[in-house]
Image (cartoon, rainbow, N blue to C red):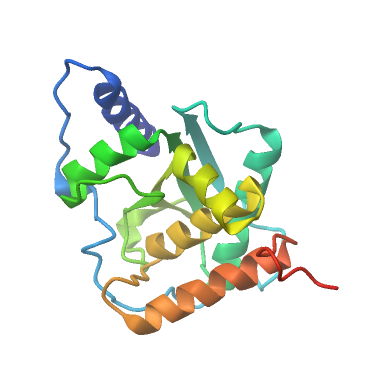
Length: 219
């Protein structure tokens, strides 16, 4: 079950959703551990490979863009890569990670949300973990763990950035941190403690990158 297969599977799903007269392609749910059913099984193992703040991590981030509302340019991709790295460092994740980040429209994320979570509305971000935050030996190949997939609605991200009065970069990176914590085993839908921790972690990571909430910039 390679990352290339996962990327093509997600691309096929998105392509099928964009075809007006095509049926939705359904994949085995065993391959897609949904965020609304992920058990609160604990946090990442202690980092045994590199200390916090190291630059030795070699993560792989795959991008796909199926929308035109926001520009997924090199600057945004660089920020997303750094956001993913910072989230892994904060959680003392002991491996390099593979993550895919796909930008879609409200229409497409609505379809995905309905088919996989049975929630009939668009949302800002969906997370598809491939582990529970504790990778098994079979999940690790040459020190690399396939964590899962992040799907972001460009339409909703832009609306929320305007509503909250901050940049689109800040909004996208917030959604990426939130989703990364889901991929690492946290779930605010089943644990109040996780909800509090996830919200605080998002703020801490983004503040460390200079991406502040409107009205909370340092004076």
